[in-house]
Length: 254
Image (cartoon, rainbow, N blue to C red; front, top):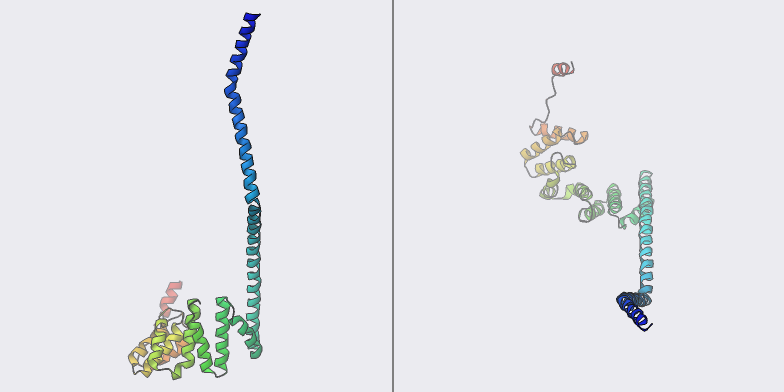
């Protein structure tokens, strides 16, 4: 028994010694995991509330953005209805009612509605034979760099129009010549005033050429083209475009 016991003891001891590294590794891993759990628990106790608050704020921010976008659409619709109502009041001769609506829109932070309201107010002042007030309103739009260029160009043309008889001719040319470009949207109105200013400056050749160019530009309204044609003719400039021969037209159709 002594030899057998010693041998078993030796085997038992060898077995335990063989298992020790595995048991130690498991033990250390469990300890490490426990430490990590304690560490995460500490982090959560320290920062968990902040994480919850951050998540709530994020959700609130998203909700706020959605609400703001919805409100913007609602306000845009209300502004559009108010502008149309102001135009209806103007057409019906209720200019006082229109002014109240336009005053509110003129203070709007939305560029398009602000520009439209100021332009409408300027036209009302012009119709009421108040050229200085009209010119001041047109100038307000023309000088507003936040507005789109078409609004500012239109305001410039209208401002010069209401002041045309009192402006020095050279100022008319300087202000409108950049807009008196063939094919441009303001060529007819701006070009007609520039050509008239050339006549005041005793430059009939420049005036005649410009009137002829206006008469030949099919994008210009017919009323302005008709006047330009007559003016060009009176200045000795032929602005009549040759029409295609009837025979050629028939041959082309055949």
